[in-house]
Image (cartoon, rainbow, N blue to C red; front, side, top):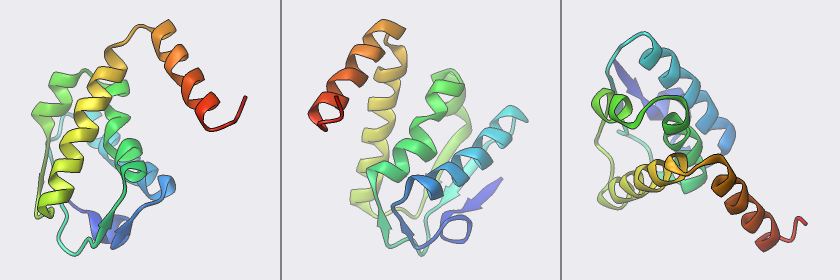
Length: 116
């Protein structure tokens, strides 16, 4: 199954809301046992926030082997390709932590943002 990211979301993929739209579509496909090819043709901007929601959260829903076996991408700029790989690496590390370690990490982020 090919998903054209620019058509599904926008040419500027920066918002978590757009990331969630893509995440929902990807979850549906992965639950159905489909492989997904993300086509980034026409995408001009990609943010880590978008990618963390769209792709990173998949590692919290599915085991990493299933995601890595089922998800591919093409036509991403070189810098965006590196960003996608970074998001995947960080998501895998995050979701492999035990729940108390994830909560400590979330607490540190809230403190750093001045939310506590």
